[in-house]
Image (tube, rainbow, N blue to C red; front, side, top):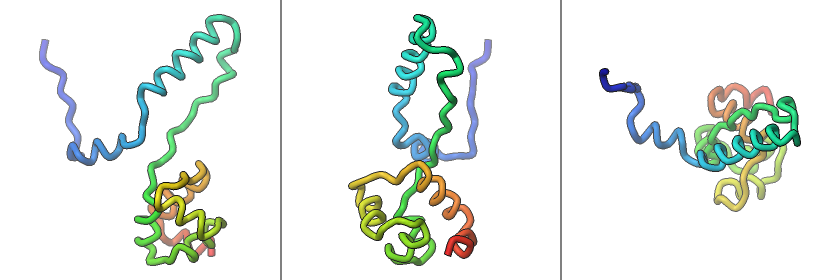
Length: 116
């Protein structure tokens, strides 16, 4: 039997960055607890909705790529300047909706014009 080999166009650093902030153990434990609750009759299979993973965003990097001040970026996102500041310094985390919006803006800068 030959050795299984995985190939990727990504570097090791890029692969590691893709998995930053992901706690695999917690995800596995959550799935096991859900399966146990189902087995014990405490939940139906429909109780558990599939959760999509949220994109990782670097708020400051996205904002700077747009050449925007914190105030201008906050206005686009519909949040306060202090909120953007807190996200950038790690005092708080963007909501799932804000993460998705910033991810999309980071991918397509023309969306800023539509949100302005």
